Structure formats: structure tokens, C-alpha cells
Length: 79
Image (cartoon, rainbow, N blue to C red; front, top):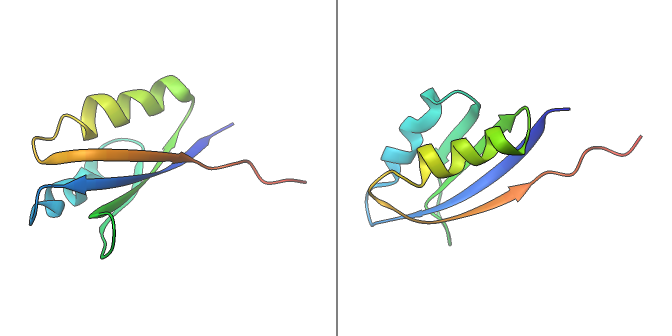
């Protein structure tokens, strides 16, 4: 089963476009700058939690202007 996660990202002022460029990372489906408490939202689909961890920790959090991330893992639909 595919895992879908919504990653809420806080960046240094004026740098959220760097996160939006993460759209090219495998598994990233959507990456948008947003207004509000967070600066960007990234939607990721991964095969498992290990793949999700790699995307979040090894790709997104290593961007120099990322200050904080909060990952929300989507619940599977109820049949």
C-alpha cells in the first residue's frame, strides 16, 4: 500500500521557492508555497515508511533554508 504524507515546511523568509523546486524529487507529487503558519506544503507518496523517511530527512530537511518540518501521514480510506 502506498503511504501519502503532507509535509508542512517552515523556511527562512523568502526562500520557500527552494522547497517548491523539490517537485523533481522522486515521490514528491505536489510542492507549493502557501500563506499562513507554514511557508510550503509538500505532498509525498512512498512505498513504505523507510522511503518516506529518506525523502523527508535526506532530501527536504537538508535544504539549507528549511527551519522546520511537520509530517502528517494520511490515513487509508475506510471501505
